[in-house]
Length: 372
Image (tube, rainbow, N blue to C red; front, side):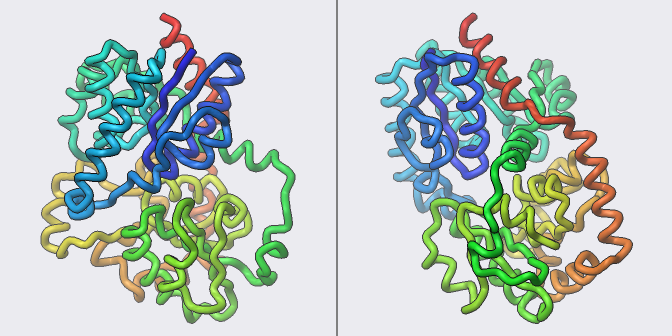
């Protein structure tokens, strides 16, 4: 069977690669073309467009790059037609992918959405587009099944692929992370500032400032795939390490972390690393407060949303300051009640998440649906 996959971000590249691996295991004749990244390319097939040329954060950046987005969309549509896939698999990245779903559906192609857009948080009206243009929705968060039931739309929960990715990593032979990156034996504070340039430019400087006086720790920045090292050098002082392509190795060795809200917060929790969840926007505070009223969830981090209470502190907008970060770190760096409770909450989170096997289950659902 022929599959066309579209992932527009680093997390989508990760989940897409695991899905492709499992599809190949169950369908040895599988052919792939895709918008994605290096991890998906490593699974074989043809990479048409790298996600680093697609991801634009915030409406200002989107407006500034409308021509690029339109060009990417036209390329994607024409390439789908030329490839003639048996199914189009859309991985998160809702703004782009729902438009592609509409096009694919108009051409009589089967559409599968893997990893639901976060419409339970905002833009809930997108559920009507999903019902109209998506033939099969595969979800990775337990509470999404009940959300979609409100709209009389049946979805299939397949588990969370992060469990698979982390289990696979733990089964791999381990290199000496510290020695290979010239790191000392001092405890590591990891900085995960996001995967897009605009995001990094907002999040990383306050993180750096808040950690510069941690004399007994070493600060290590996780470099995002597709972002050149020189981009980080304008924010990172001499002597602070930046590691690329080693985020899981970094988390496995980290004592604590500052993490930009997103998939990385859940990854950090599954590695058992105490963290502060950070997020800020370019909006003035009054506009942010107004926009926050449109959000339908109490928390922004996946950890808190899944577990159902505030297991990890969220430093958002006005609370994302050098002082707040520094104070929050002091509560999780040492052997404090806050640190112990967070680690215990992580164990509860893992119980909710369940065991690995999500990518395998998702692949089985894709193949079964495609063969109908």
